[in-house]
Length: 454
Image 1 (cartoon, helix red, strand yellow):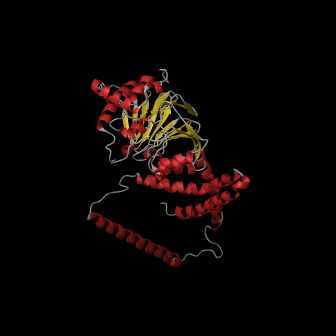
Image 2 (cartoon, rainbow, N blue to C red):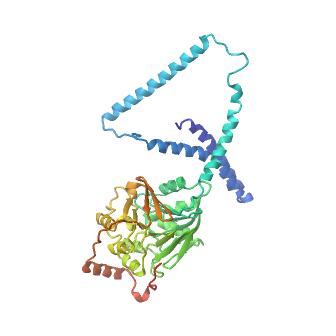
Image 3 (cartoon, rainbow, N blue to C red):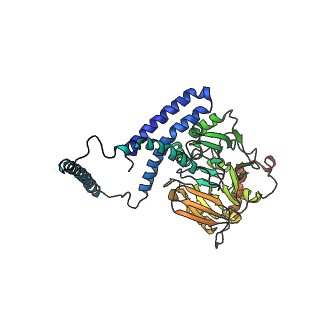
């Protein structure tokens, strides 16, 4: 089905290539006109390539689109398929020969000097040339924002990358996952090629599974502001990112009490407290995780929490500051055993919990006890290793959840019956408190903000 489109795509891609090269040459002289002309030149190629990709996706979704067959059955099936292709080719050649013979000896005569359908043929090429840009403009119109805020938890493997889209086209990306190529494929498939823009990029903390995709992203997308917790990482991608942000006016260190907005979506920074984050990442992975930026979002009456990789030591401090009930919780630290304590779940009672986690990861994420806590709280649980990328559309009174499992509507804070949550023992609580006091500065050096409900 797509083979006839391949030469068309190659030809149009050549035009796009020339347009891009010319744009780079003339950009210093014509300003924004050059990139605009390059975009117009690339639109037809993008349209044809989009049709090819969509056709392949639809075909791959059909029943029995692919089958895994064990050896030696695979060799037998492959041989049968090859014979079938040869048979079809021979049958087609035979049919064409029969048609030619019938045309030559059937006794009918064509009128001299006139080819059947010649008049119609004159208009086919101009019509085809006009159809491509018209379809491209129509498809561009289809990319307009739908008016509803959206949160997408991308399936980036063992890492995090979350896109927040406002109802009027504003975009915020939280983290970049562990693989630059995978992140760019996911973003490029979702966002139109003529609008490679991200208004805000948030770096929750400088671990490689959250930042590896960001250095490349900054070269491919127009980024407005870059929010960090002020900690420079020691991994290769984190080091590169820190070097890129030195002297960059877009880079802003965020802390508890800050607020940002993307169209109608507001995000309050709940953690960390200003002045508590070291400039260089410590050796302890838990300390780096616990310095993650935590964002509480509000969109058309819905509330969601993007919690980075915080572990159990931070949860009581967030609860003490006042957490509202949640419609969506992005489960921290890929659903590890030390993530999402019973106290936090009791305070927030999320309707939906999404775990960003890689398939067959060596850490055993998500931990069975974490899954049990989430389900005991009445949350519907989705995980990217099983459900793929999860898209949550916020509408007044309900959330529409899209994943590989299909489309589901979740009512506003509608969770149904709940089971009682297991309480932590006093010994366990004292143990966590001791660990937290070792990790954090003394209270005098880090005063807590006044208690308030965001």
